[in-house]
Image (tube, rainbow, N blue to C red):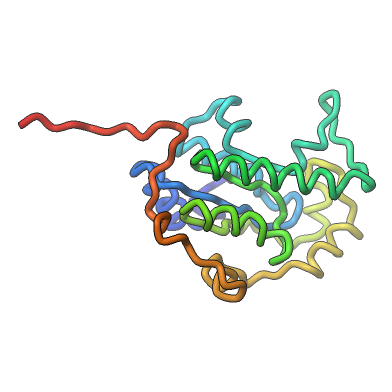
Length: 203
């Protein structure tokens, strides 16, 4: 997949810059199933902390990963709220520890799904980015049915599209809900994990 064609390279460069300086960064992926979110989430980890299974598991937090049992994706509607809350708790704990970057690889369709993560990030001094893939098939429902990894059917994808709030930014959601950085944690705030490397110059 061609990163330069399908994604906002200026935004990706900004995320890389934050990481190089050691700044806390929270990335919320947004988009329909099959649109290319997970590919981009992995790419962000590749160009920040490095491509490895350990880094993917540590820095990418997803409800889908919590639904994998014995190596297979299992969606259980009765457990959905429990899975959502567990994912939120993982992100909250990550921000409290100062882990960075944190990439939340969910659909994050609307303010309701985004607000908990945004609240955690703001309270711990994270730069926050909403990242969306701009693949040619990102709104092609038939293509999304074929490309999504967990068997989402057309009806489900159409429903998710109907509740997708497209023009959201961290700034307008923070303003609408009165979210403000604490005086002692206004970005940039240095991450704790992984440790920030400092270069000492000799005099």
